[in-house]
Length: 337
Image (cartoon, rainbow, N blue to C red; front, side):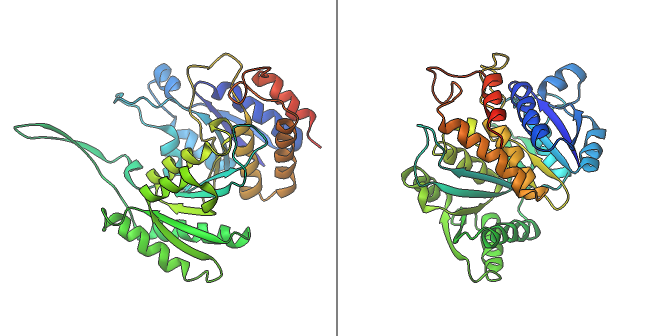
């Protein structure tokens, strides 16, 4: 087995090596293949990612991606590497779980999974500028296809079936966007008919956001579109202890990309205080869902839970007595059994 590793920007240079150290302890036979991408790489080379990196990831079949800076202003020649990787490698399903964790910042009784379509919607990058005589206007295209909608719906319902989950909630805004969101809704409901043992309901995205704040235990699996899934999974992360504990996996038919929910956190980069938990758990998700090595994934997850249960935290969880990134990783390694 091979794993391509891209540290990216910011704290990616700290949390990715931590996750690789855990992987090499549990699965020493995995070959690590390194590549570069991100905003800093673009600043150095004029390229956010090298064309040959896509072939490298395809050859490996698996990628651990740290974090990349995402400027909120146009940068000539720069586009998000992770968005391009998801789209070109057809990792169409972004799986983002939130569960109760043994930390004071988590909420009891939470166990939900956001299944997010990751190749379309307004994140397709189709933007243009329109000028008329009176104003400057920017236009973003929202792209939704039946094929992608059916594909992600099958993923959500099959995950529910395999993992004994009881309900899939379809989230959309079809009352305002009846063509795009309406197509996604119809396709998802049609696919639901193939899984009669799974309960299905639907919520408008604003109502789903309300319930995510009020009572996240209302959700089991959320099936939704790209932008809504991005926002709702970040909201859910607050109930699981914060972004530093929130893993994610981009899954396709051939390639899996482990990628924590958090960003590059430039304000703390280089200080050895970042929480590597989300990155380690993202890698555990790849091991479980993409490589099918459930026991190895459980070893990693168990070590994380035992470390946190022993009251060992990084500063984002509890500033008093916080461990460095390096020391926290050592504590996890000590608890691998």
